[in-house]
Image (cartoon, rainbow, N blue to C red; front, side, top):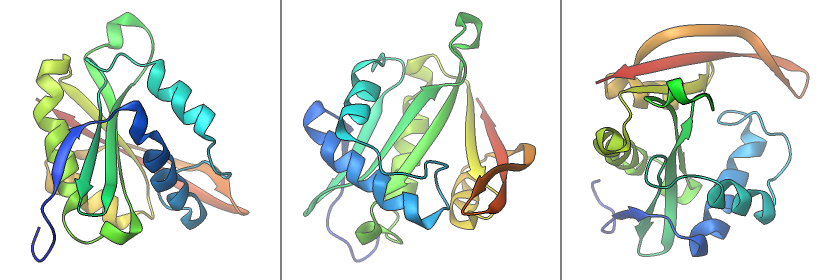
Length: 168
């Protein structure tokens, strides 16, 4: 991370939820990183955090001199027990931290934790037009496992979804 302040990556706590929510909500109007169309409430984000098994599906934050600047998490691919070794990965970076390698650092930290979480198959689900995310995941060994053509509609525009996978 050239030319930037030191970055610390750590487990998220409940006190990080407002920053996590703000970073997520910052991405919604861009229509590139999430299919949510409306900002998420703090209540919804708190429920998302409190209902997870943080030992198997951790949430991490990246903190720089200004505070939380990114977050990442593993989420169950499916709730059925036999799917436990497979998880979806998410990485969100605040606009102010974009282009500084923060997303790469977050992705690397999550990938490093995957074995301890019992995860050996990781899915990254990206919009086909989200070139920065596709490049990031591919740079770490993710390969295309499939495409859902025109899977969603945002502002009247059909968008396709690419599923990238990573196997240990």
